[in-house]
Image (cartoon, rainbow, N blue to C red; front, side, top):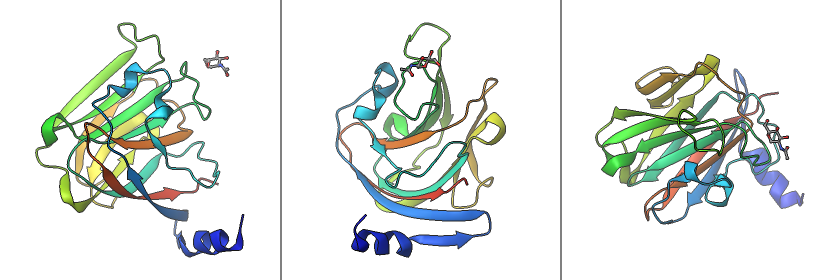
Length: 191
Ligand SMILES: *[C@@H]1O[C@H](CO)[C@@H](O)[C@H](O)[C@H]1NC(C)=O
């Protein structure tokens, strides 16, 4: 790693009570309207938020701000190497024309009935084209939640309990249906 990069990394590491938190800014590009969970290789469309080779195994919460018109989407995978036989969660914020959000679970890429679930929630106007909006996501104890703001556990807008929860090892983001997104993502280093 070049010394310039190292200085940058150090400058974005802050110490919080629960551990190290690293904040990174990402831009997600315009893409066509895709049903990501219908693809075996979901990583071809998403921006991997782990740019420093951190061990994200066991990560259960994420906080971020996103500026996007709609369909700000996060995926969390059980596989750290893109194995499409492993389960994936997808969290859609401001989908369906910025009217609904969703929590989805795909067991694997078989796409057979019962392996693919979607839970929708009414969340009118959650995203904003010209304004950063803060959100958090939690998968702690298999309780999957999306919330507004920076404080995990408050202002819940979507919640579903997974009867067969899995360990998250990799996280990606994208913005669907021809919209860009600018994200400021905070990753809490697990170890
Ligand atoms: C992918 O995951 C499945 C299910 O856990 C496993 O059986 C298989 O060996 C994995 N494939 C690779 C290439 O790791």
